[in-house]
Image 1: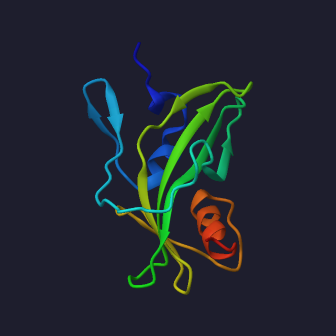
Image 2: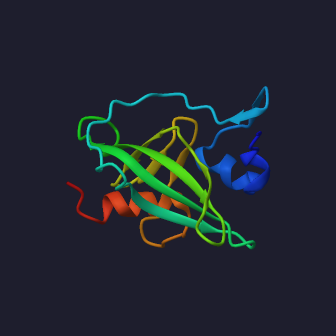
Length: 146
């Protein structure tokens, strides 16, 4: 059975998620990830940290969560993390679970940003925007993370 995730969830949401371009490889679409991260802090199995939920008109939800993270004070950023997404229908049944872990970097201080390796999203630290980048930044930079 072929699952075409890119045609189910609005493409712009997925493409903007990591700032990547859509590539077709056989019957699968992939989002390119350019850099890899060594991540050591891992929430317990099944205890991913949900930081953003997007709801669409048909009641489909896409939940973004952090699966691993580590603080880093030596680089241009404060945290390295891996994020994953899960799509559910109106009844909460899982339609798609992304098995990849997409690396991101978060910088808390000005200029604040979330970097996917393909795109750097600048964060307005004063006014919440409601997008996934601000929600991720908010989780790491305004909440005590240990």
